[in-house]
Image (cartoon, rainbow, N blue to C red; front, side):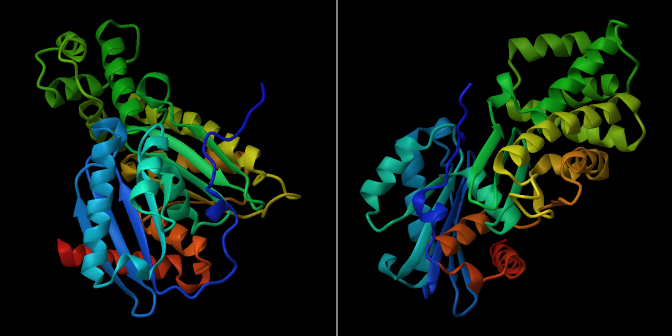
Length: 349
């Protein structure tokens, strides 16, 4: 089978300018529930934020998604007190299976070089500072994306809850309910997940919960939310819950290994021995019970990889990509940008 990367970097990001003197950058993080836009003033070291509605075209359609993206971006630009022409770079990272329709509409509405990328590209920039490395995303769903030293991109996973999402909150929730059902029919070991599932979903019995999954049906988000109970019980020592995190780490670890291999990051001849593997998403709030086995999986294929949970908000990745595109990548460090975002978010809270 001939394989090509499922997600590619736009030319402006794959071959960015070597230097630039832009002052203002725009970054947008668009998702299924909300949109966050930020204008960064590189001279004053100030961030201007704006919040908007959902902009995932899979959830609201491309027309509504673009409207939310542009409205939120325009509000951030207005808060910065500038015109669009003052922007040195603009990157919109949006969730969705296929962003082509959104790209076309943004190109028509903004003819000044605004760049639209899949949110996995924004996550990679957030995790790596837009440099060689890997982002492993595990929230409601899961996805892995990375870029090698030579700019070679690769994505693994991201096939949705029916065909993929291994190691995600949804996967953990479903597998936890399955474990409870196996406990019920004595085909699997006893687990506290059984009682926890009944209580969490307000079901009179585990078998009633099974019927509820099919008849309502339960949403992805509702099932993924049960992973918090899986985490609680794993921390309390439930063997089945802990094994689910081990299995989730193996599944997600295989995808990370594929990205490392296909980008050349795992080859001493092609990439640095040490590179970041950033963990992004709510599933990693589980802490050591998930992060430690996943780190072991990564270190089996890349012993010198630096695995860590990413603290910076995803909109930071869009800003770093905007800086990369206009040749200003050296003018803002990831740690400083993360701090500016935190200050701006707290001010709006």
